[in-house]
Structure formats: C-alpha cells, structure tokens
Length: 297
Image (cartoon, rainbow, N blue to C red; front, side, top):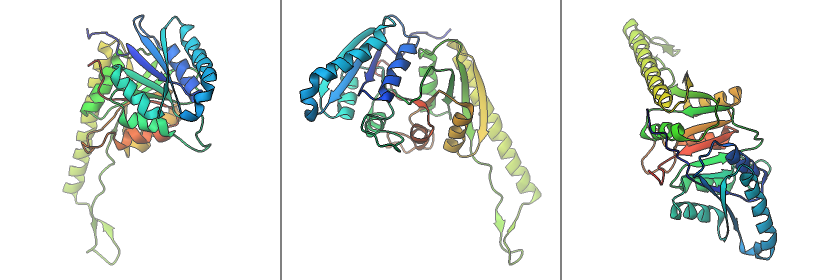
C-alpha cells in the first residue's frame, strides 16, 4: 500500500474579497483535510488602501470564519505590497504545500478569463496552485490529465495524496497525437492527389495502433497507481490536439476540477509552464490544479 501521508499540510488561501476568492474559500472548506492541516488566509493590499485597514481586517476575518466553521486551523496575514509577488514569496518562505486563489480579482474586467494576479502566481510559484472559478458548489467530477512526462507523474502522485472528497467521479485522460496525414503526390496530374501505397497505409495503421496501445498502457499504469491510494478512476483515451480535446471534454462532461502537470513532454526546459496547462487555466472554464515541485518533497 502506498504511503497515505497528505500532501496538503500547509495551505495558503489568497483572498481579495472577490466572488472567485469566496469560492476558493468554500472549496478549501469542502476538502477532506487532515487535522494537522493549517490554512493561512492572506490578504495583500496596496498603499492606496492603507486607510481601509479596519475594513480589510473585517473582511479577512469573515473569510477565516468560513474555514473555522469546519474546525480547521486557520491563521491570517494582512500584508502591504504587490499581490502576486507577496503570495509567491510568502509561499516559498513558509514552505506552503498548496496555493489556492480565485481566477479573477475584484478589479478584473468583464470579459477577462484569468486575472493578472492568478496568472502570475501560476507561472512563478514553486509549489502547486489551485485556481478556482465560479460558480462553485462542490467537486463531484475530477479530471486528471496525463502524457507520461515527469510533470504528469508528479501530478498523479500529488492527486493520490490530495484531500479530495469521498465518492468522487475521477477520470484520467490521455490525448494521442492527431492521426498522420498521407503525403500528397503532385506528379500524378495538375490536381494534387493523396498518394497512399499499400505499404504506406499499413505503416500508418501500424503506427496508430502502436500509439493506441502505448496510450492504453499509460492509462492502466496511472489507474493502478491511483488504486494504490484508494482512488478508483475511469480511463479516457482521445486523439487530436491535446488542449482542444481536453477543454471540449471538460465542458461536455461538466468537470469541476482538472489536475495537470506544469509541463508536458514536448515543452522547452526553460519555459515555466507548458502550453497545454496554460490553455487549460485560461480556457477550460473550470477550476484547475497545476502541480509542480512541492516544498515538502
């Protein structure tokens, strides 16, 4: 049996008084947190808000009360500075295991999909970040995205220890690359024609079959790992553009929370976050947990 030690011992909840931040607080309250877990509610304010400290403290206390209703250990911090910078620096200094924040802040424009603070925190945080969107009631359907990369494997392990609610509908999704297109032969006539010899057709079919077999084996391996954590999941194998297929699945199946690694197999090492995980956060329309290295190992 795999070690069941919880991954979320120290949680940092970023609060700015927005509806999305309130949803983040409710989500944290609904998690199956261990008794030793401690939640710090952080409110960062600018110099122009210095005269409103009384109101900020009152709002901070209201957020803390949401968590204390469930008997959680809760601390609060009110800090002056740049929100994204203060959140990431506080998380690193206090060895936070998970940052939770709303997708959009109070000052986000109507059509914005992801607020500037959330975007910067996800990009530069050294620990996992959970971005929460409204409307939120509870987590019923969870999707874990995997591509076999080291980042995806870390996400599997993190999910295995994540305090998800019981009786959760968990799916694990892998997207195969688009089917190869036969080469075009321009020498047959003035009109381009698809040239596909029997041997080429067989080779393409064999490659697709190999990819499907490898994809199924990958999913089976992930399901076996999750089973060791006591999590039963359903495999989902798709083919096409990874981000497009995942986002369409999230919206069609009404997924409440998507879990993914911060980088995939093909991402340049110097990039802080891969293109697929970035698109999921911006365009999936739901809450997303991006997993990268944790402070607690």
